[in-house]
Length: 243
Image (tube, rainbow, N blue to C red; front, side, top):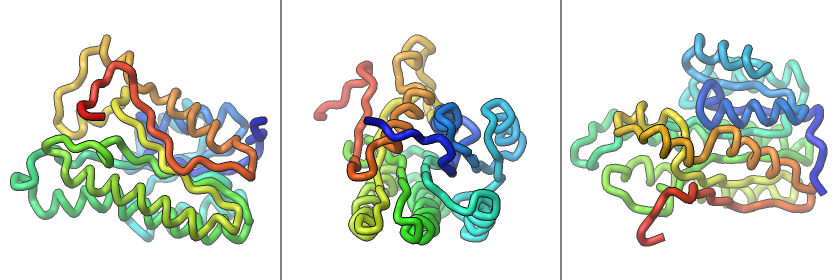
């Protein structure tokens, strides 16, 4: 039996487009009050208006921005039930020898360190509440090896173990931590990482933002005594050899 999410409070990072926008939209439709974060203020505001959620311009790599996000949400809601650490970026997908130290640092910061900052703050709030769900969006790159993805993969793999350790710390407080592991999605990841974009007919068969949003909603709606440690989602069109 699924739990009614009406009235719950959620933060979705990277919520202005892609998976984040789809997650925010589905949660909003399920009765959740949602705050989305992102760095592009104009895009963030447009998405917030379309979906009916609250925008907060913030960079997940900035502890000061995280403090501001939590202050704003807790001042308005006095609680936090769901944190979806969705923000991430390829930064540069290329052989490690061709990457700069700055690109490497950016990749680790946005895909791992920023999640740690958010999870730390959510853990303090949720452990006092004795409830809550933290969902960290990783990638199949954490488990599969492809050339050019070394830094991104390392960050996403670290994210998965972070989630496992955090679960052991928060389980007795009734707080759930899940690693959500999607693969090919109909997002702007390829464009942002300067990779070839998939043809429209292929993109239509990849994971759609609202589809991932439905999965997040269902994870949050599990009975309080159940949790999912990690969940991998593949589009049937994608072949990974070896799996």
